Image (tube, rainbow, N blue to C red; front, top):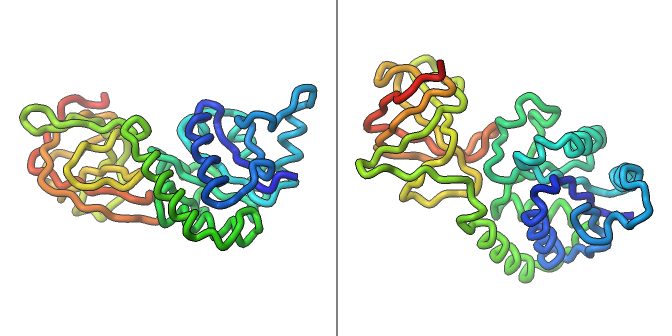
Length: 258
């Protein structure tokens, strides 16, 4: 019986392999205790893989869902997510950038506590896996060393979402993807991609244009805007995680969603 089932998209194979390496080296989890279909030998030739996956889901101690955009597009991944959700005491949802809490508003995971790929949440993950005897306890020094190496790995530019750089005049051109509910005197709009700013980013943070009603025209999903950033402030919300408010000095609508 595998103790840890990693539900993931085959499109994220390289990212999952790096994460498994962190689990093995940092948390002392044996590779034999990890069921991950992207790992060699997990699905031996000659076996009915659907039955093998179903049995592994039922018998494991924890199901870790590596949630990415590819995951949510995969029928088989969503089926695994549904099967794991039935066993709620087992499921550990792990948000992988650029996924946000709000991406799960219309799913069974709405309201469920999720972890992120940051230092604090990965430490919580280690504690959870120690409690259920999936990971080995008493590895503080080695865990800290491997955690630092893993965070440096996922911080590489090619592993980050696309950043929007400013033009020669300092304007960022970006599309509005959603509107956040606020008191009537404010407006808050999610940007399609994070802006390339001077401030230090946290993994997975989303960017939102925020201003008082009447300062600029109201926007709609699909609008493209040019924004000149005045200042920013990072917040952490229970529903969308780390979100950075972008307070504009100037804001122009370039095109409409209609």
